[in-house]
Image 1: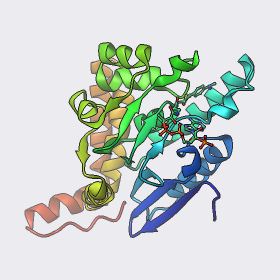
Image 2: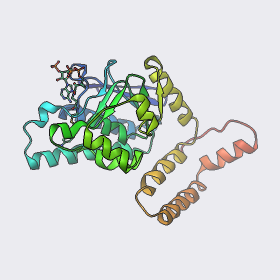
Image 3: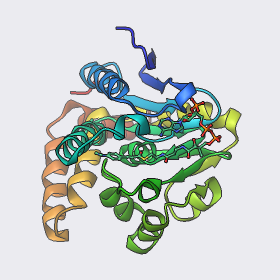
Image 4: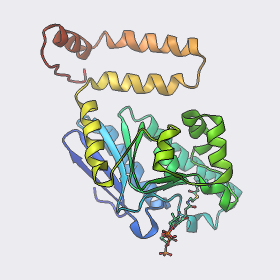
Length: 260
Ligand code: DAK
């Protein structure tokens, strides 16, 4: 499958999707969103792919937002439809069942920041700038930013970023928990691959269950989240992978997980 606005390469168990519209700082137009969904669907359906890395082409931008030229013509119904379309895709990324690492190589603004927020974790290069500048356009984040940012960094910090529209540099993003790590630009993809390799080495069913438990647990009362966690924990004990992982530890050897 070939794409016009992104590339998708799989190396071993790691798939790297690179959004590639550098002339528009990798802004997300409708075609790019469609291609991204196809690439994500492909990664979801390929059991050999265990981790996805999402990044932007060039050294300036991860994704500089929704494509502003496409927003210009929207009426209220059209805008709500666009929001639901993006939200559906970003939710799919969040619920992929495989870790998705955002490798933020530059500007991650508006829809680009929201895309990074839907990933499992975020690694930024030292030159990265993140923000939700939608209010400067007279709108609000429409791809989940008002929901995911406060869940990640807390209400007060999120409201400051959303209501000022100001960008934060990588070191501030790290300090507020918006990104997990900041590394030199040339280290960004190697660092993300090294993180991904750690995730590839462990049990895929356990990863899927952990992602689901955290995702669902954040939005329910603690007791309900604990009950879900216990069910998922119990279910894993019916898998060959759990038997293998525990046996391997006791036998002092490396585990060989088969995702079963
Ligand atoms: N869309 C389209 N083109 C963009 C773009 C964007 N978001 N960002 C940059 N570009 C284009 C520029 O127009 C320019 O194109 P040419 O003039 O060369 O043809 C090229 O990329 C290079 O940009 P600059 O010349 O501006 O580069 P600078 O280094 O001077 O500035 C910048 C870099 C990132 C600070 C600046 O480009 C900038 O402020 N860009 C806009 C950032 C932004 O506001 N992004 C958030 C967009 S709002 C919704 C759903 C979602 C959303 C909204 C509504 N609904 C459901 C309705 C989300 C909205 C957003 O994402």
